[in-house]
Image 1 (tube, rainbow, N blue to C red):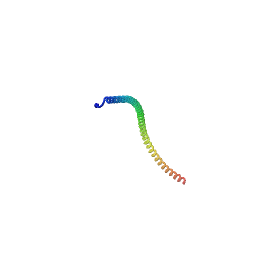
Image 2 (cartoon, rainbow, N blue to C red; image 1 turned 45 degrees about the horizontal axis):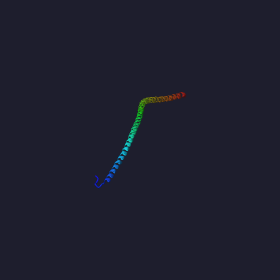
Image 3 (tube, rainbow, N blue to C red; image 1 turned 120 degrees about the vertical axis):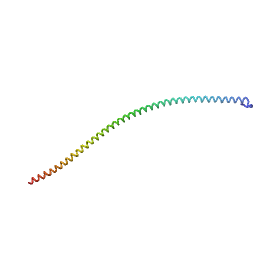
Image 4 (cartoon, rainbow, N blue to C red; image 1 turned 180 degrees about the horizontal axis):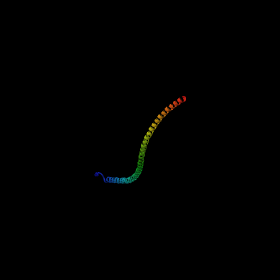
Length: 141
C-alpha cells in the first residue's frame, strides 16, 4: 500500500509505469506465443519429413531384404547342386575303387603269366642247350 506521504501524481506515475510494464509483458507474451506457434509448425513439418523418411527407409530395407532373400535362395540352390555333385563324385570314386581292384587283379594275373613265361623260357633255354650239345655230338660223329 502506498504511504500517506506519496502524493497523487506519484501514484499516477507508478500506475502508468506498471500499466506500461504489463503492456510490455503482454507484447512479449504475444511474440513468444507467435514464436511457439511458428516452432510448432516447424516441428510438425519435421515430424512429417521424418515420417516420410522413415517410410522411405522402410521401403528400401524391404527391398534389400527381398534381394537378400533372393540371394539366399540362389545359395540354397547352389548348395543343393553341390550336394548332388558331391554324391556323384562319391559314386564315381567308388566305381574307380572297384576298377582299381579289378586292375590290381589283372596285374597279378599278368605277373603270374610273366613268371610262367620266364619258367617256360628257362626250360626252352635248357632244351636249346641240350639240342646244341646233341648237334655238336652228332657233327663230331
